[in-house]
Length: 371
Length: 152
Image (cartoon, rainbow over the protein chains, first blue to last red):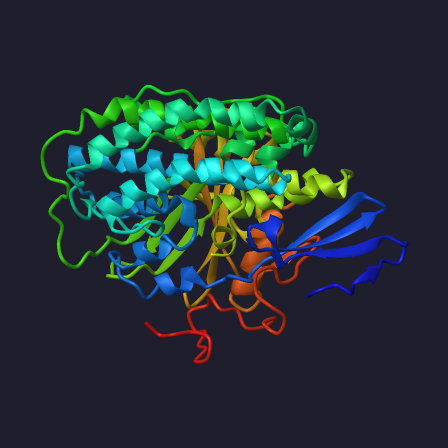
């Protein structure tokens, strides 16, 4: 699988980035052909963290398989769980209580902010600025603490179950989220002062890794990378699930198509998530946090697909049921897998040093790609 | 377009297809030999314009394999599902990576996991699995691996 390290027949140099490399944010292996400093070809080699989750799920019940999905895109674990819960509920025709719906959306949006915070810190670190990482983690830790109090975990939450959420929110939840919003609003201008407006940063981002809207759609790119190219694809708007159609928020679109546009989409998206949280945090309806479901869930024979918007793009759960207690076949359409496939196209012809900026703005999470 | 309108339009394009009832979206059954020309029509037709291949995957029904394609139009927001039953002895179907570039990676995954041969695929080799897994096909139902798999 691994090419010979050295030169190709026409004299170009082959170099390997990864599998262990700080800029790949995990175990991603890129075999890059370069001519001088210009990239001729980027070939991703995947599978270093492949756990065959799809095969595993075939022998797990509809309550059990949700826990495995937290281990795919671990920065959007709530949203992955949410997709699976929705898909099972769709098959069972379960009505989710209003309280659970609001809690789920709140958790989703907190996750989205936490994910974008981590991305922002790591992105700046990839480009050589270390300080932003600590700024980002200051806010992200607050979210993790809120999650820990209610869900009992900081990364793999496993909080959403078919029919609602696992347990009610902690009594401190509302107050702590409000405190977080206050903290976030007082700090977000620092992000722009520190990084966004920085001329060195802008020079490294603008015009780097251009992706045209046509190519973005053809490569199946979704989420902030696609919206940076002006493709309207926010699942929360286009195929609204849960209570997103009752909420006031904007789909963020940029038209630049370069790394800076993708960066700006995420920065602006965090403010929209805050807007959603503000609408809901004082309006959590009273009532049950979980619908009554049978102890053993059986989905009727058929096929069920649920799309949701994770922090990285469109995540899809496709369940094929034969009427039993376990799925016959399950497929996870992970956003990172399709987004990564566009990297080769984006990188061709640019300089080797810019590859890090492109990978950073694609926001790759390797377990999400490998599954 | 509504499902009914889509059905009518697709029947005009390709009268040989059949439809499956009961799904969330319009589900079209197509023979592997007819798939590539239908795919090009679905992608290029001005009124249909299915330009986003959301996902493609394969299901092992023990007697045969079935390919499943989820298509979406970003402009018109309509969805269809395409299914194609593959020949049990020779599971092969034409690649659509020349129509939707994302199919390149997805087809490589299906190739290594199920052993489906994608005709005219530019680069059909292992993507996720490591060397030495060329003919193992781990997502097939009859695959057993006592070393790497824990039977749950």
